[in-house]
Length: 68
Ligand SMILES: [Zn+2]
Image (cartoon, rainbow, N blue to C red; front, side, top):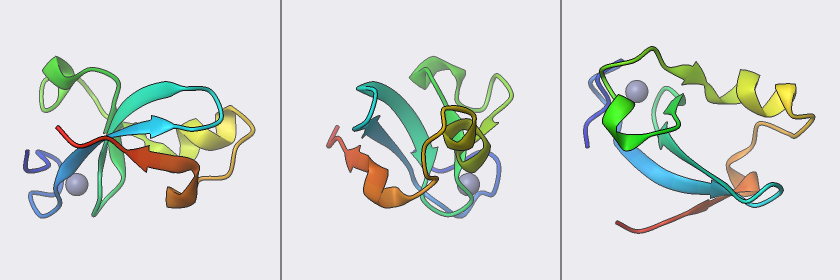
């Protein structure tokens, strides 16, 4: 799905390896949503801010991309 925030990146489903949580993240601007239904409907969470809040590094290497 095309990111509704930046309209440039692709939103992909990922798993945060450290806590086994699934998230939908834009590969371009890193806007994130917890639920697929929320994308473009509810406010996004910034991926970096979210990860730092968990005490994790905001890196793509912390994620595993889940193919749809
Ligand atoms: Zn985006």
